[in-house]
Picture 1 (cartoon, rainbow, N blue to C red):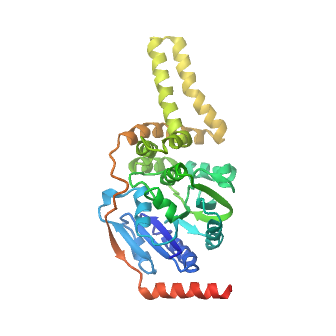
Picture 2: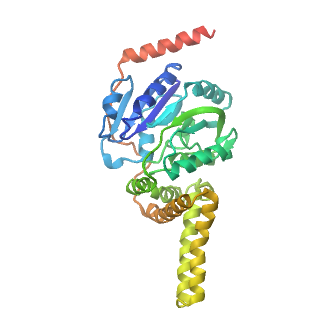
Picture 3: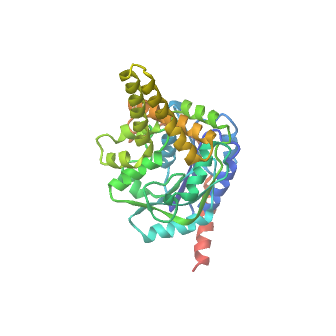
Length: 353
């Protein structure tokens, strides 16, 4: 099979139909398959998905649930030569795969390729910052890059060479971690100058989103990535390329220096002024960078949570990332659907000569 599109989802009833329809339209052109890896949705996500000719798999043990485990579960069931990972709140541009697959076939050392990402929602500070990054970050323009955030198309053989698609222990940064393992074996990643997906992210208020990140252990992810890399070939890339590790370490050192200044100065006025200036300086920097005081305050809180999460992630328990994830097949597509899809692909190929 040429292509598998894996969709990871949890309670995506608002967006899952759009994701499924776009994935099926893209997969049909290659006689491919679509796999929905559900993390235990309690809304109508599964009921909506059941109307489509896709394979639906779900964790047997919901304690396995994480961003990394969802992506790995989809890959675990994939048969395609190429594997595209899509979130349940995304819409895939079918024309992207028509360009990406031939590109990868012409470039055998490319392990993964992405395209341009459109952030549809910017209702909170996190997604406003993301949108700004998408517009200015060179990593999102055609070039050799060090990760494929927001999904991409991967060469399945390259993924299997480095062991697994996503570390099941990670609550974020799973594609960065995969990219680091691939790069340690000489594989490359790139982006094409064309649209790949539209992302309909969280629309909840900024600090409500932060609380959600804490409950889901998203804030621990940098520490989880670092722990998983200890003693492995990709450790250097993780430490040098994942800014959350560097920022978290700097924030912890910064707090220690403030505490040391206060203790050394016995709370004398001069040392108190130094401590206050040290507290104000990063907020002033973030205010300049984000453009608003509210944005600066949000980033300041988020960075501090990341620092504490770095320690929590380092201390977290791990399951062997190579161990198969226990899952149940909720629904398998009828054979007729795949036969029709394959036939459509053959007709398309015949028409091209």
